[in-house]
Image (cartoon, rainbow, N blue to C red; front, side):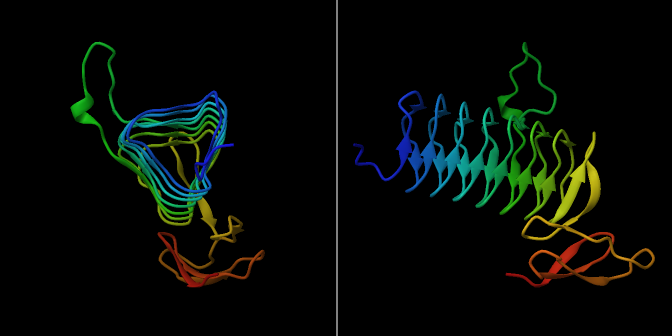
Length: 200
């Protein structure tokens, strides 16, 4: 019986100088590289690789086969779907060393990244945004936005609970209050951004 406040499967490897929060579970064949930090109550599925020098917030969930490389930061409550991909060099070549050109990527609180999505380095994924399965993100994603496609573009807005919100009416620039049919959260929304009015 382990006396550690977290669980690591015996098939996984944890390098030196790694911080793991209480209640976190690291399952089969994972590798946590040096100087990485993983918060509390995270779940890492099979074959997840984190680091080196990566910061992961609390209550994050990683499905199988996700790799989070140096230069990527995940805030709290981020969901990474199966085999989603992060990069840290924009124009890699096997025969040119470009570690000094790493571009940072930030995934903000509560965001969801779908299965097989690719997040190209240098992008920021906004709070509670949803990246659809298979999307390729090259630019910043606004808070609460739903993006899909190659390259990814906004196709809608999502509530904090993950439910899609109805598109606002009116012409360009019109602002409208929308409510989530699932949880009752309320937002002001226009064509460019969504802002919470009443949110649980």
